[in-house]
Image 1: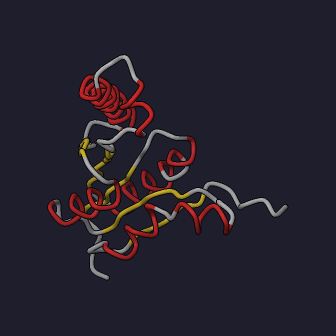
Image 2: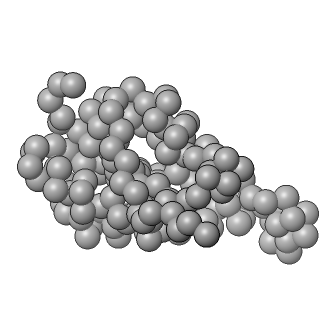
Length: 149
């Protein structure tokens, strides 16, 4: 692994994704790296929302995207002046990999849920998909261990 000049921190604005922020900031500080914070706006809604919703599909997606841009802009301000923020539209793992490739990112930092086996097997994982496709190392921060029941 070469020198780390650019880090990509992903967020979905959840408590889980916020677990990766302190580590990413520490790495940026220690390495003197540039930080890009990215959010992927999934441009799809559950079928019942589209079928039964009173508001149009496009209006809902547009409002969600506007909120994401506002939240990410505020997050960028809170993290510091040199932070670049970007909101992409599409499928999370594909867009994260695309951003990493286009911006020549040296490391991706992202959080993952500490889900159990069944949940993971049924739902899959954006993190796992990024790990398989990423053009650079991926540092995964786990929010909490899964409970055994």
